[in-house]
Length: 470
Image (tube, rainbow, N blue to C red; front, side):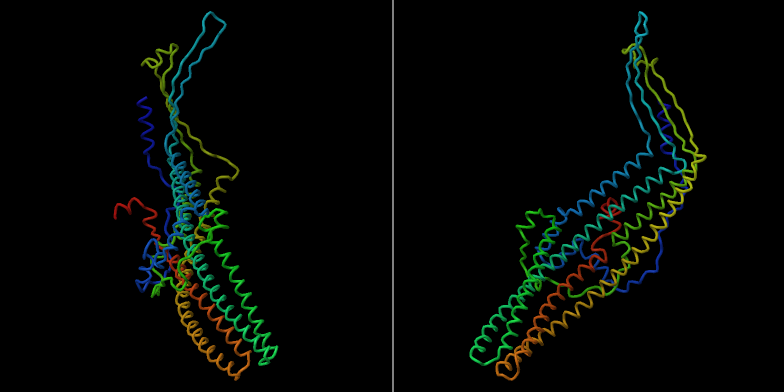
């Protein structure tokens, strides 16, 4: 028995050679980082949404991270991948089985014969050509890919919640503006109706004012409908039950204009972007897994060598079963070499190679889109800030224009059509200003996600090592 286990122990630690290509990280011509601003922004805080200084936003994001169903599904996929890795790793270890089998037989003689056995069977396939090592490495990379995918879902969820929340605040403010405008139009209509009844204006002017009033009323109803949809959309992201979605809409505490906005945003893409985005980490782990599969496929050209050992005790009397003279052991080995399988092995190698090329192209595309996303987000932040300032100046100018036009219309110097046109332009500018502020906030969210949003590859891939360094 000691010889059996010694032999098996030696084979476990036998180093296997890898037959496939050694993985090499793809090299790209990346933009230079000429400023530390983006690096600071990327590592601003793992909970970067706190930069907006809104307790309600912080609370609902925490809630979404616990109850959102998409994130729960991603976590289940991660658990599945981890179990697959553990299963693949188990193929590199010996298997042990214990068996106890007492038996009796009647042989049509005066005696009944019986034998009792207790066996321990060990089996191990020697991984001389690295097949199981490669499969284990591939499964490990797939597990890390699932971890990165879950992290990607998590960060995406945070971004969706923040954008949905800002949309609710934006629509609430737009509805307030529309209602205020409607109240003003209703008062104007009452005044114009009195003027018409007293012969100061004609019916055409009265109908124009009435039409404008109903136009603003319809606009307010449209905004209200959008607000209802935005609230239910946010409730779904938070993982609310159907009852809560219907009966408990989110109650906001501040307005869109009170959300804090960073005074400055980065001007350059960080050079560490490849380590900061989970989608890039996922794509590379998929590439590593595909590369390891090539080694596993090539190992199929070589024989599978297995070692089996049986040891135990056998005796007729049960009470003598475990005595020394009842023991036995046997070690045997076997090798299987595939000679002809109708081209199956060649096809499997071609499949593994093709899969690697696919994952390489996917990785390259992911890197391209990541830098495009970051570049677009930087430009969006820059442009929306300019647009907000310009629309604000337009709104202020229209406010003054309205006051002057109102005075001229009251004095009878201009007709009603001129005043209505100014009112329409002013309302449009006020709505555009709110929407541009919303876009500015969403652009900051987009930039936070584009540069990684606190995701760190080293802490993600090597959590124990990272913890020891802190």
